[in-house]
Image (cartoon, rainbow, N blue to C red; front, side):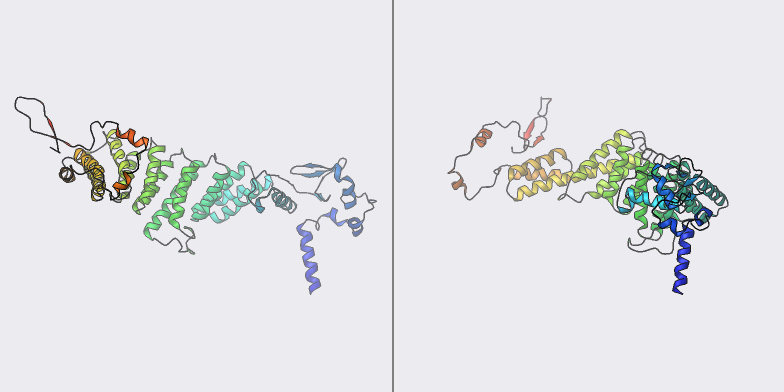
Length: 461
């Protein structure tokens, strides 16, 4: 039984390499394989090939040719009847499987087994795929286009076959496989004639994944084993990644700005305001002609307001929000409805109140630590910039209460510090005259009879 198994394995191996079934190969005998004398001159034998190997010329797509002998031979000197292509591709090495020598060896083995590049076979497989595609037999079409890709590398047929294999998966509702094929196509052919259609398909798939997540949200780690329309994990994450690829692969295309806007809106609805703000900013700055500019400003402003955490935290979002309000009034003055104008006025009032709260909180801190000079500065700022607000009134009152207090707290070791002379820089600063101190609050008084101007009375008076 073991002997029969060995014979069967040997038989299949010989058939696979084209040795059996080839009349020329049947003439080889043991003496031809193991003889080193070179006496045998029969064409196609190892001894003959050893003699002519150095002078043989390789013809791409055909094989080796020996002068004066008809036909083509493989790299072992055996006659071949099929096309052979030894294609050397200059690919970037990214590991063992992408090593140039490994690729050459794989291509050579595939050529010997009749699986290498062959334009005729590629065209036939492509035509068969088109026929299946027209008959809506998408699984068979995808298989045929895959064969066309394998047999026609670096050709127009490969590019078209990659697109239609992706289309076959798309109409077969295998969206993850379709996305993978579309990505591979744009990676290899970034200026493909199918670019617009590919981007449309990617956008449609991303929208489906996003809407499915809204309908049936799951954890990122929840696996999907039964639905071919969705990825194995993280449906929403794949949707966001696809939107990003649309912008990166086709940054000037018709759907690039829509992909950015959709991504931003998705983050906004999920309370991820920092991420949403970043996307709205990309849209405002990189797509000035986008029809989504107004919404990007309005919703970006809302992100800024929600990102602000209070007077004790970073005030950057407030400053950015203030700039956005100004841009909206200038850039979209003719597009704002009365309701939107009122809404902007309300937001601006809220911003002013928030700025006043920040400055008043700083003033209160310095007040409590008896740094009255700094406290008076910020109280004065609040009273000056927001005079009609409640905090403005409080700031004015408190400023009057601490007006006579020293600017800096008294230290218990002042007597000790006075024993040491001040350095030259401090003496120089003390000699600089102070002009119109900013901490001084000026309040308009009643006009004096007989005078048309308004005198200013210091709060200290």
